[in-house]
Length: 512
Figure 1 (cartoon, rainbow, N blue to C red):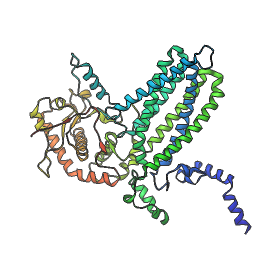
Figure 2: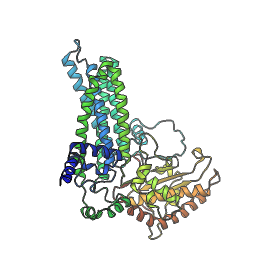
Figure 3: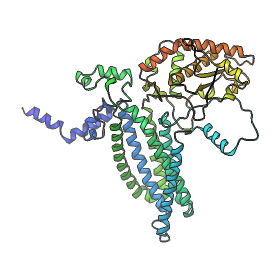
Figure 4: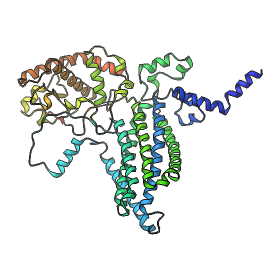
């Protein structure tokens, strides 16, 4: 009887807990991390069955990134205190306090202005170019520009990953400016600190706005149909696990629980980061002044950026924006419109290929596809050309809710490449958006196959033939395409499909 008691005592000893922690990290088995001491207090209820399988990786990287970010902010605060004159005999306490309050006020005002435009244009340069033109008036010199594609930078709802990276960059650049403020002299404190505070408020607001969509994808409601792989793992697990995890259709969302636990994780990470930042400022950084603070910031910023990137990369978003739909359609078209290969279009597989770095085009469609062209751009010849571009659905006597115009390879096009213009009509639904994008990609693949060489002899009749032939393919394949999207877990409903830019136009046709 002594042997079982010894074994029981060994299982509950502190050394055994430490050993299990080390083994968990060595084996990278983060799914069972809830068994570690005190960890379950920071995880959603019924973890891991209540969240997406990639939740553990996301939370771990976010935790490390928050520690690095909080440590860097401690160093930047120290630099700002030096710049405002704290600790020097010549510093006027009232002036220093006034400057500090003023830079906070300017920063908060900048954050309010940013939030007012967050859901409109976002980072869409064409949108802001149109805004500036509206305010300043059109240019007197009209330059003839070549047709070109565009790409969707998206809002915090449609592209939360890109905005999460924007937030991380804004916070680190603002922190860097704060650290460099002492090098510019006391007279530059207020402008530099105010600009840095605006950047920080932009970063905080962008992170908060993007966090909602990310948490929705990680929560029970957003991950009910994460992938067939998840379902198969649960089906092959023990009977107890399957009974404790009800069918995916019967689950309710636990978004609030996921958000609350994310907040508690952030608090702990902030406390640890603050402690590390104080340690660095009192030891290494204090011996080398601003140069030492700057060196410490470079290391912490690199950790923050890498962890943020890896954290959002593992999140399988359920909605379809233009880039994610590009990855899905490219995979589908490559199979010659045969039955989809599930692994190529699952959210987890798309997440691995997804590109979301700020200010960078996500895919090659930016060179050949323009979504939301104006009426004058897509139909320069007037109403007669518009009538020729309207396509009629085969099942019902009704026109499609989009206008598609193709430009086969020609020396007159930019770089001689094929070009597709797609504009949706007012009232287009998510199904119409998918149908229009499916037609655009099918038409482009058709032109690349049948008209691979640039030729200036392409006429309106040939373009009409391309539209009609590819429209027949779309009409026959679209039901199966939609069925497969729903089968592998993509959310297709009101607001879950968004492929237009902030500068995109929609056409309103009174009569046909």
